[in-house]
Amino acid sequence: MNSAHYFSSPEGPFERRRIEVTLAGQRFTALTAGGIFSPDGIDKGTEILLREAPAPAERGHLLDIGCGWGPIALTQAMLSPQAHVWAVDVNERARTLCAENVAALELNNVTVCAPEEVPSGLRFATIWSNPPIRIGKPALHQLLQLWLPRLEDGGEAHLVVQKNLGADSLLTWLKSMLAAVGEDFAVERATSVKGFRIIRVCRGPLP
Figure 1 (cartoon, rainbow, N blue to C red):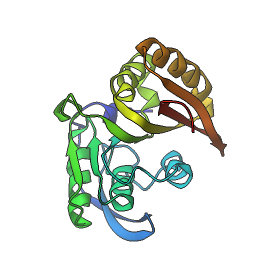
Figure 2 (figure 1 turned 30 degrees about the vertical axis):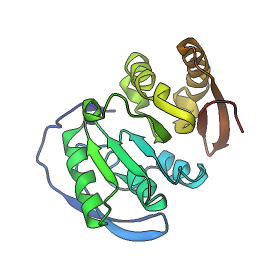
Figure 3 (figure 1 turned 90 degrees about the vertical axis):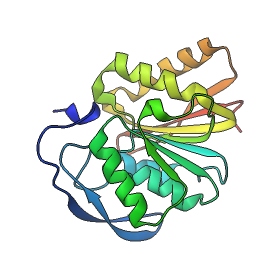
């Protein structure tokens, strides 16, 4: 599989296409394009995450790691209008499309940006992600080490990962990594649906 869309500016023409999607119960026409993740619609893993994860925090800062054209970030913003959503992606084209979809929905509580543009002291009440497993373990681990320790006290992250792409081994690694951070984190497999695991990370004990 070509995973170039995980890394910066994709090659090829930037030709927008329109797709019909439903997010947070609202039907709208989203803009996508080639050279980004899942340009033809909401991929199965993201669909499961949006259906199975508990509601995001009503206030505070929310994070979508690897926003693509925006299905997770847009959903967070619509469900939690008093919160501020950070939609982060290394792919410039994805960020452009996500920002255009934010504008189309007239959402004023979303910042679309590159990872290095997120203020370093920011902490997150909710993190949702369909993380880029196919970039390989070293890069994936580095990514999750960057963001998950930035949960605020009582904050939760939900990650959706295919079972056959190493969800269970990732769960084991997350427990080890977060234990080494020296903070009070709890990690569990929240649910399993159609070959996907949802991994839950809490800063503090599991409720």
